[in-house]
Image (tube, rainbow, N blue to C red):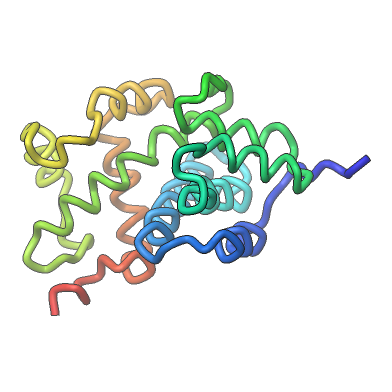
Length: 193
């Protein structure tokens, strides 16, 4: 019987991303989620390495199995010997019926789609630099239902509530985390040049 791995390192997460051939923009998304997960791990005094790795790896299966995501990712992680905590956290960020019954799972769900919204807000700015984005800019775009219309704002608000963080405080945590990795996620103004 295979030993169960009850943790995951950043290098293991990066290896999975390489193995499954994730596209650059998707890797940038996963790096943004990693940064937000690390910020919440620090806030809640949790295992920053594990939370960051979960954020980094959460979509590793998407390119190869878009119609089976994240179930395929859960299956692959289980086959590689990862513990239920890790597998279920990955499964719970999608609409799979797996409950978000840990703080880590709630955090992953809360930050995932929000990072995409913040990217969208950044990309309409002339500087294309997340460092220039303020919460008030995000609030303004949040109210405009035509902007990033596919983003389910109610789901993000509910996810923040489930995490126990007020929505705009949550936006601030995720924004600051993304600003800290701006060059890694391609939002440091280089695209404006």
